[in-house]
Length: 288
Length: 172
Image (tube, rainbow over all chains, first blue to last red; front, side, top):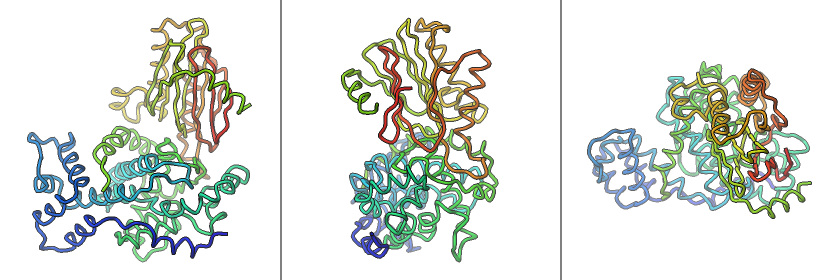
């Protein structure tokens, strides 16, 4: 039997998010930092530079002139969006080729991540909640725990399939049955290891069970965790990046109540997200 | 059955025509197999005219176009009530006849939901049945519901329709 300690200690073997993101995070904490300081860091990272320019020049910003420098791109996008793109690019850069334990390649994992990010953003917009600006990256990174648990599940694929198929367990229960932990518990540890904001750690930890959230900041974080839970459920229902767990999951409809959203509002969010998911995937094509 | 079908499929060597999410395709090219992947709550509607030897497939996401009329206009395949009539129209344009069409459906799965509100798959299926019933069209076979994700193939040559799910393949 795999123990939880074993998995938690292997989080240390996961690659870090890269020097560019670390440097930009430091600048982001420094109130006196100027656009030029950020631009200097961005210019050293071709993948991030490419993603920023593509986003700044995308139709959504409707600019009449072409953005060609890092300074221009950052002034168009703003600091918050810069940090989000930097995090997304760094995340893409550490994805392994395959998440064999979940029966998917990194492309499928990436599509699911982007879909949950965009759907979270659409749900956040519909509900008018706080932390809207965090919704895309929080959705994008909700499954970070899987980068670690995948390796452990790989050897347990048969037992996992049996738990799902014959015992009809939910995916999270099946994970716990074969490895004494689930990707949510481990996701929180990964978020801490990567020094990510508490809202991303909370989403990684509670996105399957938003009503179960225990946190001192629950009041502030609850809407974001709820939005990502609903986005993840929609993404799986609609088939964005289906993995071995398929539809073996449970919706917590209290999340809909707390955000005051009806099913038809969620469906509308899904219909709006459909084209945007493709668009975002194009704009974040390069991994750091 | 799964193994036999798999080897039969290999022998057929048809080239795939992929239908994405919120997408449709029709073909009368006997060397094609129309395929759509990873149907969760979405539904694939499959039509075949054995006389004209033509096949069509729609992969719709959501039941009703009133959810987002603007999207329905730019992409009618996203919704059952705009996509289903359009797929029939495309088949008629290929020279298919209504009385010959064999109608099949797969998908419409659901995640566990004690309150029964998060029911896209079920409503996708209900709306399909309503549209077909109103038009007096009969579904000859379907594989709908449950927690499985499905992939559907239809061979244009003879209309063989195969649903694959969790590593197993079954003829529909």
